[in-house]
Image 1 (cartoon, rainbow over the protein chains, first blue to last red):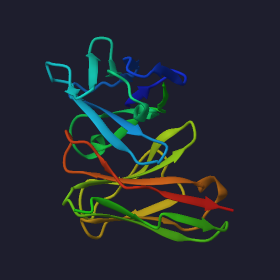
Image 2: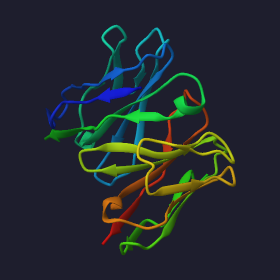
Image 3: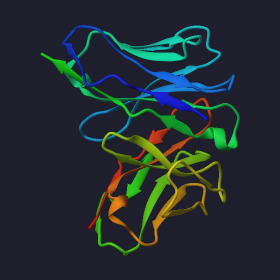
Length: 117
Length: 112
């Protein structure tokens, strides 16, 4: 079974500073993928970044990067130069390898990030 | 493209009533999903589909049924609503395993 753990309490960061949101996972699959989503107060789910288990380099998308440490089973999201609009709930998710039952995503419980001006 | 749409956006039901939530996507995606989101619980998978005519149970399927008669539509039914089913329901779709899920805007359901 797959499991995603996000245990940080609400996070606070000063505007323009960097912040790391933690995510650890557990899976017996050799092939898997990790995703981060953002959910602002308006409620929509916004895809941020994806990392495949066989990707040799850490994924980056603009101000977002994923610090992927396979041996530690962690996939932390790093947001550089925080902006007020980054205040939101952030979810880490994982999909397993193969098709069928492993096509689903398992989500963590989320982390609330507040950016202070 | 409209992406993923959900109907209705809001609904209030009385205990025991039934209803169907409609999810539609115009991106020709194979995989479709229904989640519920409750405070402090993240997103929990109710049912999902890996293609037209197929459905499978997720983490919390009890009290819900689904159908995917057409590739673009994924219906979630509540046969006899209970207050425990008060939640925000999200539909999502994606084209393949290495792709992100595209989410609909959500349906806020209250059961009194």
